[in-house]
Image 1 (cartoon, rainbow, N blue to C red):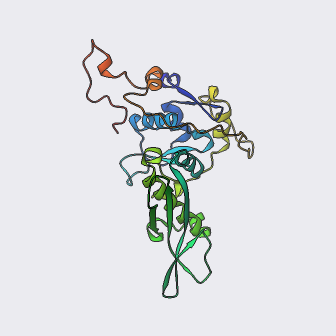
Image 2 (cartoon, one colour):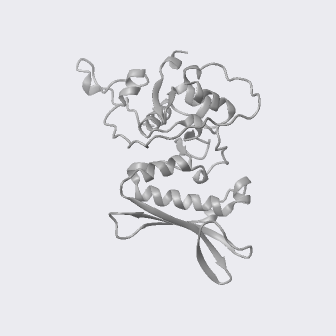
Image 3 (cartoon, rainbow, N blue to C red):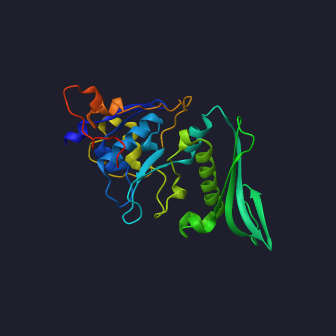
Length: 269
């Protein structure tokens, strides 16, 4: 396919990552929704700018029919925390669960609570060096509990992650604004770990468009030592790498002989 040749390639922690619209649809997009080209191009641009490798589970695109008109970019907790902690103003965080113990409502640190406690929600506080007060988030268990799988076996851990994500997004909107953890996704639970085909393709990005190999058993993710996390780059106008790859057209302002197309926008969904 012609689209297979239009790839954007960048490096994350020493690993080469190649993405195109076909690659995203085939290996990274999840859910039963119909993904538009604009949603996929936006996802590719955000992965490149924020140094996220979707083939090792840093990020993926989710859309479910009848639940959201637009796709959501979901990232792993480790990638989420790295982005937020790269801000020089970051000064630590605290998080825990909110339980009802008898007639009292108690905020506990961590995810541990007693068998007789009723888990009601979670809280998180993010501290910034330039702020007098921390950014505080409190969430209700009822709003996020899917009553499935890990929500049944580890409810405290799951709801605590939601509170952490909300607090960090509010504290550092330029770093992690618009990014969500799987625990916040309103649709069915999503497998967070990449499958064996994704791991093979992350090791061999040049051959990502080849037919998916047959599964031969469990494979371990490649080990590497992350380099210092780079700062996100402010993108003004169309992403130059996406333009070079042919995924989008150049900025109409740069085309002196052509009339601007008001519908040609990278981030218009």
